[in-house]
Image 1 (cartoon, rainbow, N blue to C red):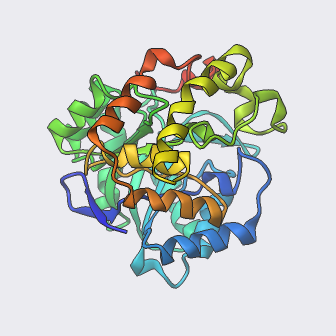
Image 2: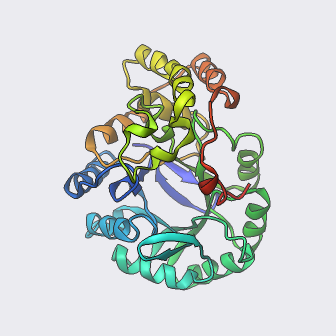
Image 3: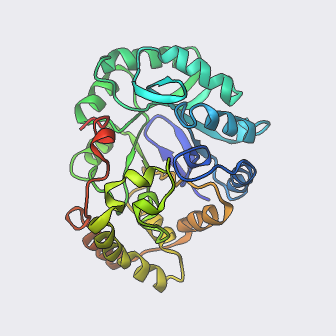
Length: 325
């Protein structure tokens, strides 16, 4: 797999990364052996960029990633995130007051002496971003962190953070399914030389075509509470997403592969991190790097899945309250 430069600070990663969250939570039961095999297969395919967070599990995902990459540290780029207050094994609001404590915990669980890319997971309105980035920058000076990132941050927060210490990447939801970054955030990132790491680049599976209605998912699965998977929204979105299947058929590819190829065509400063815990889907995702979409196909997809064509908000109110927009 080709490499891409993520931002202007010198971080080089594979053109696709691997989102590891689903290996420990949110999308059905965990399968540790298959997850470990999936990470091994990612390395074989040239994927060297692995994304986790302290809140995934919580804690369990960092431990799993640390085990999977033991003995391979010099071959990989590890990104993790802090910023939630974890109480009795569950997130209970935001907490960016204890950056150092969070990072020390992540280093221990990951079994490493440094984090390649450290993100603030969500912007904490109770802690000035200047203070947060100042603490993160101190960890860079100490060699415990190499590069800094933000997740789901808005324009003003990005500018203020970048003025304290260069921000290498913004991680936010971006896909054919969710285009809220296009009007203002992506132009700002390019102005400042910040890379984009899209999470949920397959719309939590919707663009891959293998989804069910919200109520058909088990308790604890994130999609049960996703407005786009519910009622009439689900029916409308299935019809809209059919265009991805049509384009995929022309390339003898899966819809997931085409949806990721669309993202890769949107700029060399974009590195999606599709999440999976199974080798089969990992291989489908990795194939996107070899798909060449025509300008006409990209325009067709752009138009068919324009924001107003998607039914329902991307988050329910409880999750939306943590987005800095």
